[in-house]
Every structure is written in C-alpha cells, then in structure tokens.
Length: 500
Image 1: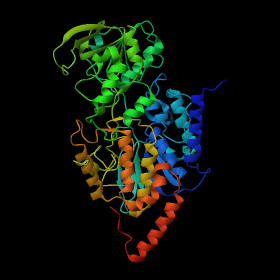
Image 2: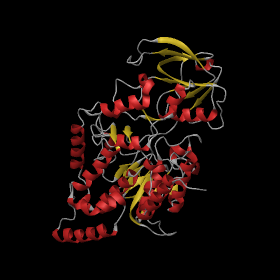
Image 3: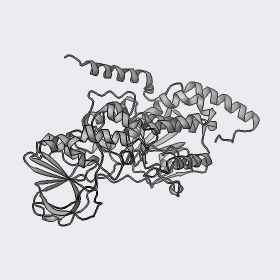
Image 4: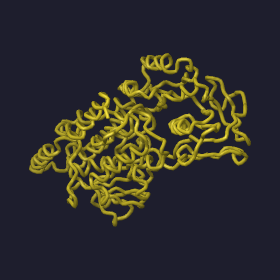
C-alpha cells in the first residue's frame, strides 16, 4: 500500500521523537531509587507521568479508584465513536506514542495508553480499586496515602483529570417524554438512524454527540445551547496558530483571528459566532462538521433556554443573538425522537489533598505554574486544575511538569520557597489583571511554555536541569552536580538552606 508523503513524514517524526526523547524502560524486577512518587489516577496523565518517573529511575505507585477497565481515565468511559477534536500532533502525551491517523478514535487512544503502561512495567506498580481519600505527611515529612500500609512517598502527583462522573441534570417534566434520553458518553450500542435528535448543550460533549449522530445517519439534529461558543476548525495549522498567543488572554489584536474565523470559517453562519465574549476566554469547540450539517439542512443550532420536556420533544425559549441567558425569547416546542444530554462531567475532587492548599487566595487553580500548591512543592496536580485553554491537555507538558517535580525533589537548591511561589502567582495575576477572565481560568499553550521557561531561567541552580526538564535528556549530569553542591553546602553548614 502506497504511503502518502505527509503520512510518511509524520511517522518519521514520531519515530524520531520516540528514539531521542523516550526514557529507557527499566528492566523487569528492577529496584528503583528514591524519590518515590505516589500518583493518584491511572488515566492518560497518570500513566504518562509514571512512565517518565520510572524511565528516569524513580519509583512510583499508581493508585486507581476503579478496576483495570478504568485504565485510560475518561477515554475508558466514552463512546467508541469519540475521538480527538484536535490533531494528534498536539496530543503527544508521551514521546513513544505512535498515532496511525491525524484524529485517532477512542480505541486507538486507549490502546496507546495501555501499551505505554505495559512498556514501562507499570502493571506491578498500579493499585486498582484503591480510592485515595487522604494524603498527609508523617513526622519526617514523607507522604502517606490513606494509611501507612500503602507506603511512604517523597512526592505526590494528583492526576485525576477534569472529567469524572457524567452530569445528568433532571429537566422538568422529563418523565413525560416518549422518546429516548441518553448522556453523550453512553451512546455505544445505540443508533440514531432515521431519528430526530436533540442535543442539549453546546460544549465539548456536544461534539461527542455530533460524532455519534453523524455516524448513525440521523434524519435531523438540533443543538440546544444556552450560550454561544466559539467553534474553530479541525485544522492543525489553525489550532497551533491560535495557541501561539503567549499572553494567554484577550489582547488588542484578538479581533484579527476572531474576524478571520467569522469570514472564512463561519461565513454565512456568522450569526452563530459569539459577540459578548472573546476567543481567548473559554475553551472553544473544535469541529468542522456542524456547519456542513447546518448548510445541508441536516442540523440546526438554537440559542436559548430549556423550559422542560413535552411528550414529543423539548419546550425551548429561543433567544435572539445578544440576549443573555434567561432573557426574553420565543417559546416553541422542538420535536425529537432521541435526546442526548451533552451536559459534561463532574470535576473530580482534590479534597484528598491537605486542607491548607485550598486556602484563599492561593487555592486551585491559583497555584505555582497552576499545579504546585505553594505550601507544598512536593505536590503536583498535573492536568487537573485547568479551567479553560487553547491547546491540548494531553501533550508535551505532562512530562515537563513531572520532571519539574523530580527536579524539586532531588535538588535542594532548585526547590522554590513558599514565599516565591506565591510571588509568582501574584505576578501572573497582576499581568493578567485586565483579562476578562481570572488569571488562571484561561491560558494558551504558548503561555504555558513561557511559564516553564521562566521557572527554569529565574533560578541559576535550575539551569543545569534545563535539558532534563524540557526534553528528558541528561539526568545523570545534573545529579553529579547536585552531589558536588551537597558536599560544598555540607562543608559550609548550609545543608538546610533552600533556594528561592
């Protein structure tokens, strides 16, 4: 079979990244060194972080509340028709990942997570059916997970993600509806063929529902959305360009990409583009099919509020553009045979962490680099504190956050002091004080990379770790320097001093 030149280049790039950047898996039954890391959650982030740790010689234990069927986190629970909304080049959660398509589906994603889990021998380091309810320190400052029988750890990584159990709100008169009602994540085994489908909600879950509807060949689709959301095309080039806004907020130039989207993507449907909020305020929907479906008369996008169910559909208060939620509109019945509740997921709780990390004004997401609570640099909440962003949540940064945590744990001079962690939070809050959102409620991927560069550059004792932090290269050399520094510090009686 002939391989397309672009596909060949992409596969070559994936091979190169794996060869250069993937840490070497430890041999079977290898005894790994301290620091020991406890990782809470066996989803994409937890498995990726654990593989980085063991690949660099550090021991880990993964605690997963569910059984082995939950390996992969949210991807283990969504529909088989679900897939990446963004191009897989922006979803490289580990250097060894090898995608066979630009937009892999749920099965391929779970397969890559499972292969990574096995490649790094994480089967023997994973405790399934172990829900973490408390994390606390012993007298020596080592972390205990639930109780001492689970061991003691030098660092903790919370990797519970941002999508937990499905949200299924009750809508008035729901029992009267004669058709079928499903959550957008529970559509396997169902069909919408020949049916009129109503999708309640207009976020990422609506995209999941739309993928199912398109595969099922429904008669018609109506998306009932309470508010307008920016929709951007499934185009890697466009998505990367938008993520290059290093300021991570609306700027005086934001009108340029917004206008281009209206003219070249929305085109005749620009009435659906938001007017009351900018592009860089909330996670956009990534979908190129919905506008095609609308233009072909197979779908409609309705803005308004749900009043309640009827026997034949949903009573809907259709609002004009610019009218706020709950405002006046034209009430009508939107008829359908199947209702898909695209109402998202509950955010998993971080309540198992120490109480003091939730004290205002330094509560999540207002943490150092958004993931390190300033009271404890040995805790990293990787990928579970973000609110909105442009850029992938399953990408390069998982490894960077993991290696920053390892750097903090093994190098006393690289550790941040609580005072300076709080000052960085204050500085970022000030720099984004004019943003329409709170400082850490929205960011772009280039802003995230800027945070990482700043973190390493601000402290000269971290410079030796730069290649390790950003690329996972050269951990042995920094460790030799750390040992030399320790000898000098011990000789000068400075062993207890930490860098800011």
